[in-house]
Image 1 (cartoon, rainbow, N blue to C red):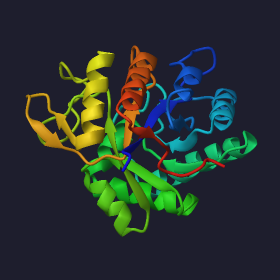
Image 2: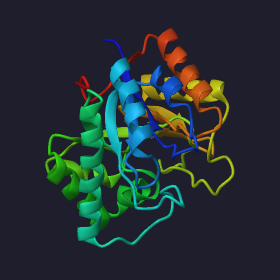
Image 3: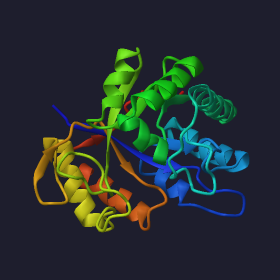
Amino acid sequence: MTTTIDLNSDLGEGYGAWAMGDDKAMLSIVSSANIACGFHAGDPAGLLRTLHEAADRGVAVGAHVSYPDRVGFGRRDMDVAHDELVADVVYQIGALQGLARAAGTRVTYVKPHGALYNRIAGDAKQGRAVIEGVKLADPALVLMGLAGAPILAQAEAAGLATVAEAFADRAYTPQGALVSRREPGAVIHDPALVATRMVQLAKHGTLTAIDGSTIRLAARSICVHGDSPGAVAIARAVREAFEREGIAIRGFAGAPA
């Protein structure tokens, strides 16, 4: 049986004259694109261009919803009231759905961004608000979350389909959590090392934690951050390693249109 895995990246994160990452190059590599919705990054014209490129390449589209935090790039934790967070999620998904239709594609999943992603991984209260927002926008959407995190079971219990995700360019603790970006070694920059780690994950469901121990991690999708230095080289190294090992790269959410 052929091993299959989804490869995703966070895209559409430029704003006006300020470019972020190389969306066109990344879309030639990945099978799913987590596209900003304007709350942490992204302007309508830029998002539409990225969506057109995703549609042309047959890449699945996800809504990369965030706290309203452009200055902090969505990486500052926020204590948002339940009703506000629900509405923020619905609003962002709806905006991207409209742009996606205009580009000839559709939104098939939702991946929270940055601080919101990390907060709901173990915060059932904010997790409930995100789940409610996704269901109100479209209950057929898949929720992407951190492999092993309680949010996945919480979403499934609420009736949402989920997909577990691992991060190609991030280090893990022995407990299976992401090492904080404030800690040394949290981000891995060596494309060859990242590729080797991801082959290990795809084939064996294990990773080497930052302390050298081996952890189990059940993930169906792997993320390469589009804003990381050398992101395209890392993503390409992972894809080429998968192809050498006979690991098929396929979107988890079905055809985008």
